[in-house]
Length: 322
Image 1 (spheres, rainbow, N blue to C red):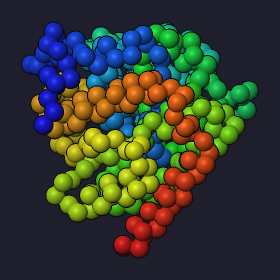
Image 2 (image 1 turned 45 degrees about the horizontal axis):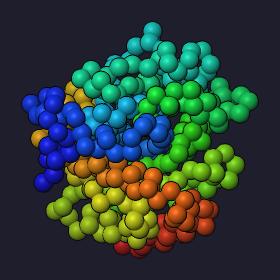
Image 3 (image 1 turned 90 degrees about the vertical axis):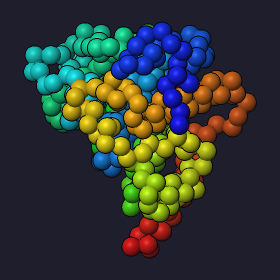
Image 4 (image 1 turned 120 degrees about the vertical axis):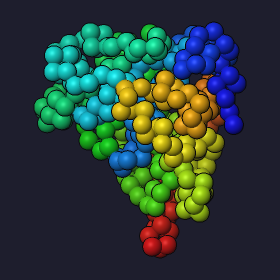
């Protein structure tokens, strides 16, 4: 099993384990301010769990990290211990032009390298209110362009839909991370997401890349979980992270305590998985930086279209198994 000490050198204590100074923090040198949108319009796939715990792991690795919650359910906000507060500025006010992004950012207790742009229920009305706004798809991009040079990573937790808020996130992002649940019909709807990525590339953000696919809620007792992982690897190939996040009771409990898994139970299987995912995430970044323009561009519409076709075929196989 991967342990926190394999990723971090001992300096500060979190949850009884020394975890602050990291080898990963020294990868890549200066902050690059990469924006990663965590998106899947299918609900219940571990999207917020992944956004919160990946952001927290990067912060533990001393990577200055900003977590942006653009989901009206505000689950990322609550998962970090911030309850609803009508008097607190939120990402809604920033998108509406009522407050600069810097004014709404919140520090996160015990994670000095992590900041949060909180959400609230007012975001429900944002898509309606911004319908007639000029360059409405670029609102979030303009906000993040003003602060991204302060962070190594900006993680955006998207709502479980493909509406204007998600389109704003994809327009602002350098890449998208797709959580996929290891359950029946996991690929259902992925083709729609890939089609949306193609449209965003074509008209709003031509450099948008698929950063990777992370398998979540894996149950090693079932053949179904193994089959789903195999199907997803056939569709996305090397874009699928080797790290697989298991079903874990502690991961489910942590948000109700307002803590990422590392502050709730650092020794749990869920914490181990997200630390491994963060290490792999950073390794991919380092490899991408080294390779630069030497590799063919994976962001072409042809590549995404091929993944979309393979997703449709895999979803058809899921139906055929029923």
